[in-house]
Image 1: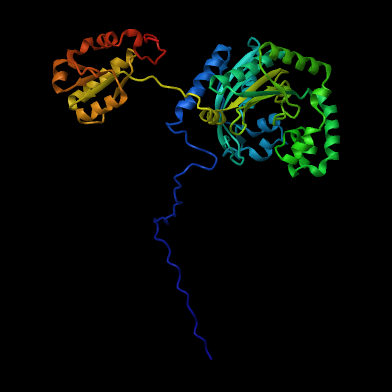
Image 2 (image 1 turned 90 degrees about the vertical axis):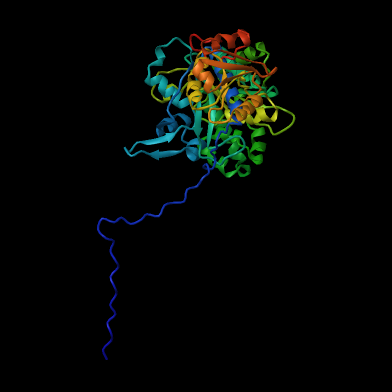
Length: 462
C-alpha cells in the first residue's frame, strides 16, 4: 500500500531588501537600583555641602583636582587590595572594545595618587594638598545613606609624615561636619601600625582568631587567611563579641609608630578635639598605615552613622609605581551627611532672592526684554522673569509670589518710546523712566549695598 507523501510548504522568505522588524525592549522609566536622581528640592543641601567643603579646602590651602570616573581596574586591585570587599564584591569592572580591563572608580584616593605620579606633582612644594569631589561606584547591596552611585568629598595631602598633618586632617574633617550643622559627632581614632610592626601583630591576631574560629561568620572565616584585620571591623554581632577581647594593635606598635600615635593624640588634645581610641577601627582598605580615624554621628536620637573617615597611606604611592611618598587623606560621604543634616534640621543653602522682576507685554517688548534682562544681569542685579507667560496679570502674580521689591514693565508703547515702567510693589507707585537710565536707577532704589550679586567676574559687585 502506497503512503501519501507529505509535502511541507517552504517558509516564506523575506523579500530582498526588506529587513525583519526587531522587537524593541520595553523602556523602563526608572533609575537603576542603587542609583537615584538628585531633585531640585534636595539641591540646597547639596549646594551647602559643596560650598562648605570648597571654602574649607581654600582656607586650608588645598588645590582642586578632578580625575576620570574610569581607570584601569588593576589600579584599584593593587592599591585597595584584592582581598577587600570592594575589589571582591563591589567593583564595576568591564572590558572596553579595545580590550582594556577597566573599572568605575570605587573611591577617589587611588586615582588621585595615579594622577600625582603621572603628572610629576612630586616636584611641588610639600605637602601637596589636594581637594576632590565626585561620584564613586560600588556594586553592593544599597544600604542606608549608601547607594551604588554615591558621592564623596576627598581631602588628601602628600609628602609629609609628621603627625601634625594627621591632626590637621582630623581637624578639617571635624570642622566640615560641624560647619554643615551636625554638632553632635564622635571622633574615633586608632593606629594599625606600619608593615614592620603589623606583621607580628597579625600573627598574634590570627592565632587568637583561630582559637575562636567556630564563633565567626563565614566571611570572617575566609578573611583569616586573606585580611584578618577586617574581622575586627565586622558588623556581625558574634564577630563583634570575639573582636572585643582580641589583641589591640596599639599595644603592639614599633617605637616609630608608638611615638607617631602619641604625638597625634597630643596635637588633638591641643586642638580641644574630643576623641575615643577605638582598637577595632581598621578601615576597609589595605593601603592604610599608622593613623586611621572615623567621624560618627553622636546624637542621642536616631541611628548612629559613620559620616566619613580616613587615615595614613604612606606606602600607596610606591605600591603603584611612584616614589616613596608619605600621605594622608579622608573622605566624607555626601549622601550620609545630607541624611544627617535633614535629621538634625541643619540649614541648607539659601540662594539669593531676586528683588527685581521683569514683565513684558507684546511680541516687540518680549524681544527687547531679553537685552534689558542681560544688561541688569551684567551689572550684578539678580532679576526674575516669566518670559513664557502672556498676560501682564499672570506675570504680576509671579512677581508677588516671589516677593520682589520692584517690577519693571515693558509694553509696546514703552518699547517704541525707549522707556520702562518701574513699579514699587509695596506702595503700588509707578514711574516711567528712560531705559538707558534703568540700571543706575535700580541700583539707587535698592541702595547699592543691598543689590543682590552672584558673580565673581571683574566688574561685578561682590
